[in-house]
Structures are given as structure tokens and as C-alpha cells.
Amino acid sequence: MSYQSYVIAAYGVFAVVLLWDFVAPRIEIARQLRAARLRAARRTSRAAESELTRTDSERQVSE
Amino acid sequence: MNPIVRWFHQLGSPPYFDRFAARWAPVAYVLAILVMAYGLWAALFQVPADYQQGDSFRILYIHVPSAWMSMFVFGLMAFYAAIALVWRIKLCEILAMACAPIGAAFTVITLATGSIWGKPMWGTWWDWDPRLTTELILLFLYLGIIGLYNAIEDRRAAARAAGLLAIVGVALLPVIRYSVVWWNSLHQGQTISVFGQSQMDASMLPPLFAMIAATKLWFIGSLLARARADNLRREAGKDWVLRLAKPEAAR
Amino acid sequence: MMRSAASALIARDFRLLWRRRGDALQPALFALLVVVLFALALGGEARALERVAAPVLWLAVLLAGLLALDTLFRGDAEDGSLEQWMLAPVPLSWLVLVRTFMHWATTALPLLVATPLLGELLHLPRDQLPVLLASLALGTPLLSLLGAVVAALTVGMRRSGILVALLALPLYVPVLVFGAGSVAVAAQGLDAAGPLLLLGAGLVLALVLAPLAAAAAIRIAMS
Image (cartoon, rainbow over all chains, first blue to last red; front, side, top):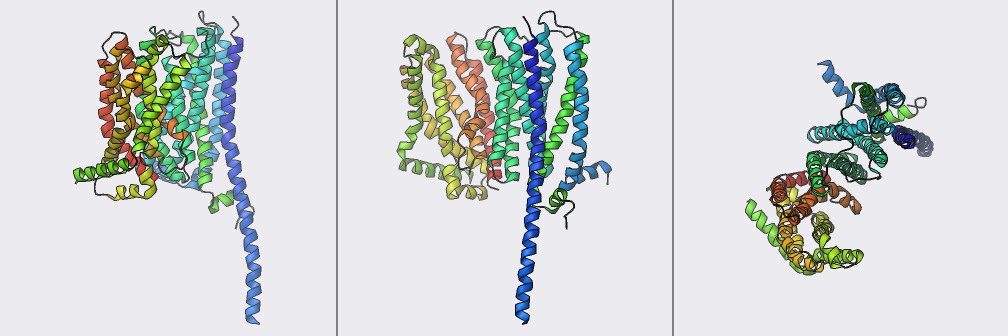
């Protein structure tokens, strides 16, 4: 009986599962960092907007 | 302060842990792959075939280390969970929950390789052998812990609830194992274990030791990587994460 | 203090149960359903059924209990009583124990009473009935106590559904093994005292430890 296919299958399962175990946290870390980058971008754009309105209202008050 | 104690305290700081994990996870992975390369090569090409089981016994070099890891990781998870519950240490919560998917992965490997090995040996893909049955129940425990952790909104309460389940599980695991062994002897009659106590010749041991060491190193790498990911998720709004993501635009 | 708290809780649970008497029969009804489905699936022939009667009955009781677990803490979690429990001067684990006892009395006892009847439907051999009832009498409180820990872990979750079953299954395995196994042992003509005593020992341990674990879980869930 050829055991080769069974051995290949078993070692293959080992490789596939460990590959998943390696990739999954990397994907998660990349996702978290990307979300943080987007959050930072939203924060700076919001800060830029509110600066404008503050200057506008100050000008109105002083006039 | 004692440098080791100080290092433990430093690890509790999320940005410090992130740098630590980012630095050491790749080291662990590389070491694991190196040792695994030797182990797998030796298991496949160096060790002579078993006179009884032929080449299929080479599956042992994957099956046994994975089975041991599935048990070891569960115990470690319960240990971290106990520390997290008693002392409310956030890092231990993270580490405990990071253990679960890795342990589940090793359990899946154990079940799959056990099944694949069983086909040429017993002629069937599945047998309600006490070891495989206990391993299957262990998989359910892992999946339950992962499911419970993901089902609760608040990360800290979720980790503590799943951690409590892990502790209950580790306490019951010997009971489950004993009950399944008893059940097997009751119904199956014969207790010939194919993976059993056959004496291994000394020449067949080195790849086994290598694979045991390799899976442990791999676990360390994976634990650090997953803990780093969970750490980032929990600290999502903080400044240090923003600085990490966008070092050039940081204010 | 503890006795008055217990009697107050028991009286309240009885009153609430009395107002919805029909609910108490639901687990028994579900067990009947399971038995009917098994009989239909197995072909209804007496010889096939009597071999599996005891295990099927054990499964029917176990699954019915699993379904009833939802009601253990849900009512009190929803109306805020659970938080009052945490603030009470009596230990939370004591209240959990009393509540679990009441839950067992109202959901599992009717099942125990119904078992001989259900046994007849499955052609259960008469001489297996005493061991079956003994194993259920020891096993169902054990299942309730283990189930209380799982229910406490998932309290406050709106759709826990299959998660409760997934969490409970590994914990239930030893109980099922020794419970159904005791009847199998008796059927082989051997002494069933071994597994029954193990169930008893497990019950004693669970009486002490399960309420503590469930109380810790409630504290975590309500934090």
C-alpha cells in the first residue's frame, strides 16, 4: 500500500494550518494600522475646518 | 527595583509591548522555521520506515507535537486567564485570548493528521478512540472560548468571561478525558491503541524532539503577533497608535 | 439571613412560575418531541428501539434542559434584579444556588416524572428503569449546575443561541457518559454503582463550585 499520499496529505494540512496562523495576525495588524491612519486623517481634516470657522467668527465679532 | 520585575511592569505598557512583540515575533518565527526544516527533513528522509506501519508512521512527527501543543496551550491559556482574573492585568487578558486560536489550530492539525493516519491503519477515517474523542471535545472548548470572546462587546469583560471559561475547562479536562476513556472501555471492548506505547528506537527520536521544539517556537512567535494585533485593537484611539501608523504626519 | 433570602427567592420563583404554569411543561414537551422524532427516524420497531431507549431518553432530557437554560437568569437580567442580587447582603453564589435549584425543580423534575412514560414509548426494558431514573436524578441537577455557569457567562447577550450549546457541550460530556453509561453497565448485568457514585461525587463538587463560578461570571458580565 502506498502511504505516500497519506503522508503528503498530513504534512500538507500541517503547512496550510500554520500558514493561516501566520497570515491572520498580520492581516489584523495591517487593518488596525490602516484604521488608525484613516482616523488621523479625519482628525487633521476636522481640525483644519474648525480653524477656518473660528477665524471667521472672530473677524465678525471684532467688526 | 529588580530588573526582571521592572521588565514585567514595562511589558504592561501597551506601546512598550507593541515594540517588544514587533521585535521578537519574527525572531521566534525564523528560529521555528529553521528547527522545523531540520525536523521535517529528518522525519521524511532520514528516519527509516517503521517495519509495521511503513512510511505512514512519519505522520507521527506532526501528530504528536501538535497534540502536545494543543494541551499545553490550553493550560497556558488558563494560567494567563487566572492571572488576568485575579490581578486584572490587561496584558495577561490579551495573552490568554491570543492563545486560543493557536491552540485551536494545533487541535485541528491533531485531529486531521490523526484521521489521515488512521485511514491506512484502521481502515476508517474516524474512530471513537478516547484520544481523538477528547481532542474533538478540546476543539469545541477552544471554539467556545473564541466564540464567547468575540460575542461580548467590551473587550475586557469579554476576555475575563472567556478566561473564566478557560479555567473551568482546564479543571474539567481531566474529568472529560477520564470519562471518555471509561466510556471507550465500556463500549469498544478492546483497547488496542495504534498510536500506542510502541517503543521508539532511539534513532527515531531526534526529529520528534526537533518538531516539539519547533512548534513551541512557532507558538511563541504566533502568540506575540496575535497579542500585538489585539493590543492595537484595544488601544485604537490612542496617540501612540496614530504615531505608529503615520510617523511622518504625527503631531 | 441566608435562609430568609432563600425562602423569599423560592416563594417569588414559585409565584412567577404559577402565573405561567404552562411554561413548566415545555421541557417535558420538548423531550417528548425528541423521543417521537427518534422513534420515527429509527423505524419504530421494538427491537431496534429498546437497544437505544435509555441513551435516547438521556439525550432528550439533556437537550430539553439545554433549551430551558435560557430562562435561568434572563428574566432577572432584563428587569434589573440581577444587579440587586450583586448588592444583596447574602453571597451571590447562595442566590445562584437557590435559583438553580428552583430551575431544576421546575424544569427537570417534570422530566423525571415523565421518563417512565417516555420509556414506554421507546420500549425501554423494565429492569433498566430504576438505574435510568437514578442516573437522571443525579445527572440532571449536575447538568443544571454546569448549565448555570454557562448561562451566567452569556447573561445579557441578546442572541446567544448556539453559543450556549457550544459552551455547554464539552462540560456536559462527562455527565452524559457516566449517566447513559451507568444504564449500559446495568444492561450488561454488571453493577452500576461505579458510574452512579461518580455522578454523585460530581454533583457534590458542583454544588459547591458551580455557584461560585457562576457568581464570578455574573460579576464579569454585569461589570
